[in-house]
Length: 272
Image (tube, rainbow, N blue to C red; front, side):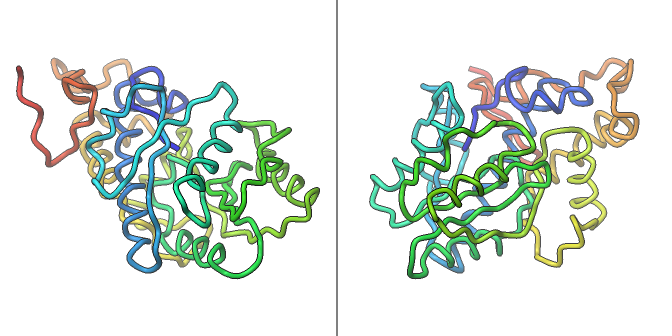
C-alpha cells in the first residue's frame, strides 16, 4: 500500500524531527526498500509484487521502482475500503492468494514474507496476519475476499490487529500469526531503524535476517552527514539551525523535477 511522496502529505508523523521534504524522502526510500524486499522473498517462493497506490493519477511517480513491481490505484476515503479493494483487485488478476503489506517497514525480514506465502499456498482457507508493535498490522494475507475483516475496524489505532482477529473469529476463519515487527511512523521508530541499519541493533531480539534496506541506510547516512540527523533524533526536535550555515537541509530538487526521489549514489535529474 503506497502513497506518492509529497512534502507535508507523506510520513507527516516524522516531522518533526524531520523536515517535510526529508520525511517525503524517507517515504520514497521505504518504497524502494520494500520493492527490493518483495523481489528478495520472491527468490525463495513465487511472489508477485505490486504497489497499490494513491492519490489517483500519481502512477508516473512510481516509475523509479523495479519493472517487476506492478502498479494499480487504490484510493478510497475509508482505509479499510482501500485494503479490501486491493485484495479484490489481486484476485481479479488471477492470483490464488493476496496480501496487503504496509509501506513503512523497510527492514521487515524476507523470511516473514516467505512464511506468509507458504501458509497461503497450503490447503485450507486461512488468513495470515503480521502484527505491528503499535497494535496494527504490517501484513494481512487471504485466500478469499472475506470483506468482514475490513469492517468495523478503528483504523490508525492500537487495536487494529486485535479487532481484525476478532472479525476472523466471528466468521470462523483460522489465522496464522507471523512474528511482530515495527512500522517507522514516529521518531522513536526512526531511532530504532537507524540503530538497526547503522549499529546492528535487533528488534525484539529477533534472529531473523532483516531486509537490507539499502535506500533507507543511504538516506540516513546522508542526513547524518549533511543535516545532523543523529543529533536531532537524540533531542527529538528540529534544531534552530538544522544544517551547517548556508547549506539547506534538502532542496526541492532532491525529489526531482517530477517529484521522484533522488537517492544517494544516483544522478540528479538534469535541468530541462
